[in-house]
Length: 238
Ligand SMILES: Nc1ncnc2c1ncn2[C@@H]1O[C@H](COP(=O)(O)OP(=O)(O)O)[C@@H](O)[C@H]1O
Ligand SMILES: [Mg+2]
Image (cartoon, rainbow, N blue to C red; front, side):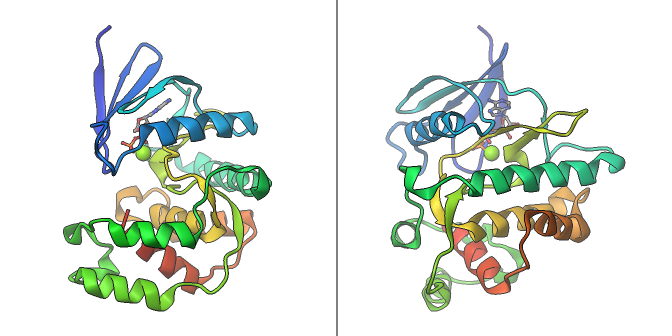
């Protein structure tokens, strides 16, 4: 079986595809990539009726999934289909966030994510523009200073950026949520903050502020600047 390399993602996992399957590999001793955690979450998510790839093989350092048809929101979409894609994205997130939190075995509340963040290294060369030039100490101080006092808990995807959602190229329906290593119960703004950042990034100019606003409105949320800032800051530690 010959493999075609797809990406070496930011996480450090190498992704390759071959005849209908995707393979993610990583150093099994690398604490930063947990493919067993991802495989377990994918299977759980599919079990909840949310579109996600079927897990074909999963062990430390290896995750093999069946190819999900469609293409991601990081690929180019014709202008007339973009609002439909945004609406489908908002709709799948409403469905995900409507799952009962009591039924989700994965914890991404601040009690877990803040200590985890404090133990992680930060790539200071890859900070969001508003934090460019900050030191790690500054990031940590701001994280602890702005930690929300309450959490609006739902089942979150945890890395809801445009390459991680696939859509049918004709109907624009969501065919799969992928890259779910950080899925778990957490504040809904984990996903809303990361997704709106992805939609307004220079790397995805086809979306932009207007469609990001449409996304929030279709989802049914008013922008929450404090939580947006906090969860984007927390993501610097991932
Ligand atoms: N099961 C799958 N079906 C279709 N495409 C996939 C699948 N798994 C991964 N991909 C493609 O590979 C890319 C990288 O996979 P992903 O799991 O997001 O890894 P990374 O950690 O590198 O972001 C995705 O953006 C998507 O285009
Ligand atoms: Mg990804």
